Length: 211
Ligand code: SF4
Image (cartoon, rainbow, N blue to C red):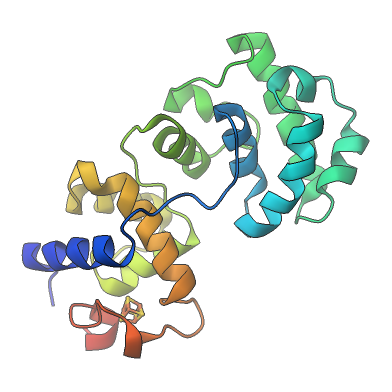
């Protein structure tokens, strides 16, 4: 059954009731630290990232210090997260590029962000949305799964999902809905076994209806 405007209204109401002030679970103290935390979060939980960034940001709080870092020392600090060798290489290279091209600042511009090592579309959108308040809907594994299950969109890949969500949802809701869909995916609409019995959007959910 096609998704209707009325369904969007119900979804937005329920999501803002369930997650009134949804926030990014990553811990950071600056736009630079947010960028690094998001690069590190690929295929790793935010919780694990927060554990390693506590030490990482104490030793390398900004682009200037990380640009000068010894790769093997950075590897040691972040070794508890997946793909730590590649990520160590990427965050040092990103810090160097920030120093060389942007005076140590993180550019608030999508096209420049995606040129940084280790930064893809999702990372750039998270930095812009969470760090700069620029309307965007970064699509991670939770946003992809939950939005396609509910039926707001019906897409096969993350880019199409992002574009379809931007089409389906009012711009002023993008950032909060990004966070809310992530929280919903973590708490209720889990990957292996969604808790549909306790889900407040089950009435409109296409996964439950079997549409
Ligand atoms: S009803 Fe089930 S599948 Fe639909 S959003 Fe809720 S938990 Fe996910």
